[in-house]
Image (cartoon, rainbow, N blue to C red; front, side, top):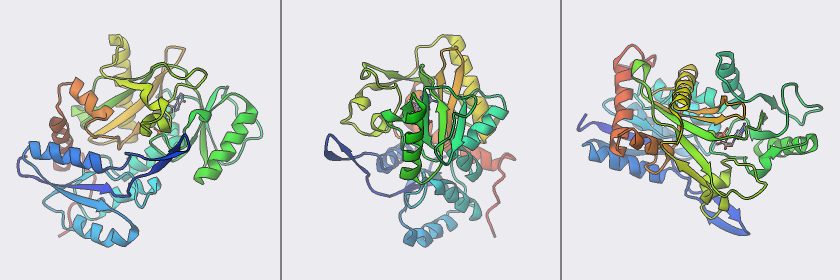
Length: 351
Ligand SMILES: Nc1ncnc2c1ncn2[C@@H]1O[C@H](COP(=O)(O)OP(=O)(O)O)[C@@H](O)[C@H]1O
Ligand SMILES: [Mg+2]
């Protein structure tokens, strides 16, 4: 694989800012650190990285021109949307396919399915994957849908990275539910998913590879350490992105998770099954919770998870003996093997 040219496609939307204690802070939530990490990993394995930023719509023609000319390269796709809109994540992968470019990670269908938490859960549930009871709403409800019991969590239907999830996301009364549903619909201009709140341990499983080669990495657990009294134990937006927030310091990832062998196997089996059902490729992460009834429930499938060197995926890879450059090489290797085999349904390069 040495000498292979790899084009890293990523969103270059600048930093977000966030107000905490009346202070505006810059968030380290853009993709530039991930890009630098991946470049380092590629160089360590003798590959040649190039950058392909996706900025605003005016740069689209230029972006497409590089994709169209990418015949001898493979695109490492980090795009989580386009023009600051998550809903366009699948369109970027679709553009790669139209040009016959080879790219890492999931195709447009899996990306689109996973982004709609309601559709993804409909499919998972119909195929026997346990997931918390839920209802999708595009207005405040007149009554509590059957099958739902408080406490409930309200999430925007089509977001990621805990956007729209703060400690008020968990509601315990019909009055709170109605007002939260109205607030989130208005704020994010999209429906919400209302889900049973699972008050239990949170795990995620990183999955790597395709077909018979795919494997689940060791489980990771998010530990809620000295969490503020009376607050729901959730990975809210501040816990993920705002380093100055108490929630950030009190949600501590631990990998490999301290779990009995039986639970580990069950987490891994459910993750592999979910990965297959959504049609993920090369790598993905499945988020889960352990209910009080002892049953695992899938919260969501992430076909485009954070793979920076300090994120959970890299930690799980390390726990399985893969150093960071090994992980990056494994992702590219999985994509290349897929294109070389019958598994690929992508169109062949034109001409
Ligand atoms: N049904 C639920 N029960 C308990 N916690 C939840 C539930 N749904 C989400 N959460 C919490 O919110 C976090 C983000 O939710 P998730 O569905 O994974 O959306 P995102 O795409 O924003 O990561 C989870 O990591 C978890 O801590
Ligand atoms: Mg998640």
